[in-house]
Image (cartoon, rainbow, N blue to C red):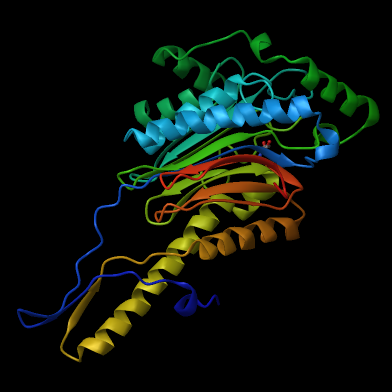
Length: 367
Ligand code: ASP
């Protein structure tokens, strides 16, 4: 068991009451106005040797544009969900990433796109799987959340719903790119795996904490090269590739989807953090109660988690994925405003920004 007694900074206002008279009282924390934001564009065998300086610069520019789009929404007081959408829209339209335009090919040479969103305030969620003609699947996932009684729609039904909702439809050829076609051909010719030809996962995702303390997560992908039989990965599965809960965190994942589904990565991280936060609060209440005496009623209103703690939880879950044989990475924001990454691959396209002035994009493990 992790030592949260030593690793949690317990920031709380303890109000101990004996009858009507406050025995001890501290002012509660001022209303929070901080925000934080993180994005990813896939994880994998991404090394400096395999990238030309132009490719490196182009990826960084695309990540920075998406990071800036989401950060602007948050900085101006917009919602976490709007920030997530703003960033993912740009990443879907950018052919370098495996989502929207530039999505990988299925075995049959088509594209089947998956996406999901989750709102941490309400735990409303929306997802689409296997859509073939939706320019921005993240918009459709959000519509499923806001304008349907369902959480997940798949295939033709999802596309019919998109038409009803006025979501932009494009010809399937819109998603074609030479680089991805070549990857499929190489895979078939040499009987390679998806990872051999792609070297990385190119799913995109974003997670945000807004100034009102609400969190959101979103993920969008073309899946894995050469997928067949209607295969669906973790990206549209709420709890696997995407999860948000104001009580714990918001997570978006990229990696070998089958393993992320089996571990329930995004929910697992949030559930562990929530349980630990509750345990820390109970510990703080015990401490305050002991100090206040036997007749006191003690309330602890907040428990602040150090960044290292959230990082350890995320790393533990990614270790679990690795032990099963899977790889990939996640991005995470916490109610405290931490924006974190955890990946068990050589690199991950990623970026993070906070109201404290942090603003960075990175690609390689040692970036
Ligand atoms: N997680 C995605 C999937 O399994 C792939 C990726 O991350 O690129 O479909």
